Length: 316
Length: 318
Image (cartoon, rainbow over all chains, first blue to last red; front, side):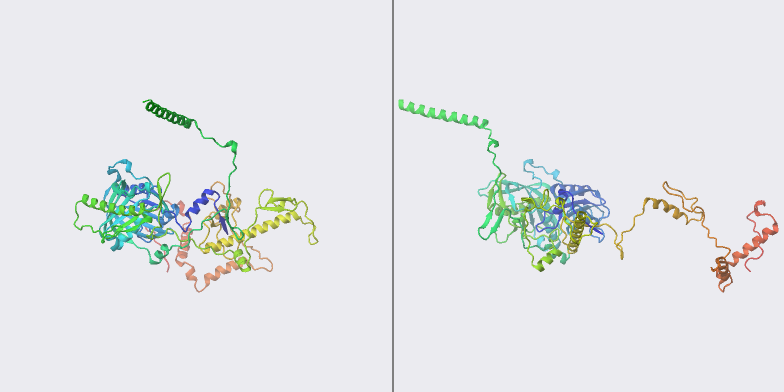
């Protein structure tokens, strides 16, 4: 009664392979949605969060009435969306009288809720309200610096969890190679009190200093807000242990065109494409010819002048 | 790393992350701008610390700029999905392991002896193609009426079917261990029926038309007043269904009509007849009949009575 179903197109196969569990994972994608009611500040917070994480985030615009992250039955919709969009972090905004401007940041493990942290947003300043030189505006999708200041992040367990969640949220892809010219944004999180964190987004200006290391200057560009810790839910110990497991083996990289021989040792194969001598495109020398002619002319002139001056000198 | 003894930042270069655990913000809140300024200055120090390590890493020059090799991140963050689970060995793999059979790589080009050429193993113009056999010699064990070419095709179909079944079984055991390959999905096509392996029969078009007729027999009027939808056929036996028992009993058979009346009588005259018979209702009916007979005319021809006046009844259940 069972049937084997395989994808019929290459594209579908690639999508499935991308979503499969792997040794080295892709960057976590964020799902941004809101509940029955949102306030103006909250909707702009969600919009700006989406803009900051463009390329790695999905924003739902409809309201979702049956999502209650902290209740036992209210997570089914979230898990379904996470499965459908392959998002492992979500930001759920809601506005009620009891919890105004509420943002729930949560993470998923295997498309089931792993942990949750609920923050209230105060003193929100939108990125449109900051004026700065547009040249230093950070590019979309650049890898950010993340900075945490304050002893609260070490001593208070809720702030510790928030630190981990914010790192996960802002980190983006884990890369091996980084282009140093592409570093243009930084997120600054400061624990101003055991329950409040000030978060701001800055652009980086690199200034000349005497050494190879440039002098860093930060200019506030992006949204800034105060996060007030409300509720949180830590992951179960067992689930946490399983999620933190990392495999020691590196992913097998297929080495092609190399074979090991007992007699001849390690041998490689080189493939040279067919050289069609008659058909190779010759460089277009017309411009170069012009320049060379100009330079040639200049050289000649200098030579003549030089010799003329010599002659002059000689004659003198 | 900052060289002051009190201020050692925790830097994770792989994540471009820095943490200063020693800074204390004043509990007395200065103005908002002051606080923001303080946070940004502290942030600048941290970013500078990361940049110090970053720019000192060995870099390669490319067209876009200097490229550095980042070390792996040191802060452990939870994974988003479980680690890939090892696939259980397939039935063939188990067998091969037991017997010590090694995997041998097959060549793409094979020498064909019928035509002395090198042909490919699979695909167009392949070695040992089934369609190319012109003559199959008959063996002593062959039956006279059998088509050997059809038999070959049949055998191949059976082999392929068996292979598919084995593949399904292997995938099922892999799915059980949670290690199904990412591009494969196992879909259930029918409901499991305990006991039988038969597929539930699908109702055909003609049978659907008769369903309304079947339902009509359950109504008291035999489906005469039911609303009919287009496509519904009238019931096969129209009108009410009465079962009339034969008056003259067949020889050797039980007199069914007698049995029926005996049954009713038995119930009436039994010990518990008062439970079956509604005596009050019976008396009322009897009295009514008597009244009708007395008056000689039916109630319908009488002038309309005044219903507020109560009619004196003779005797109720006495």
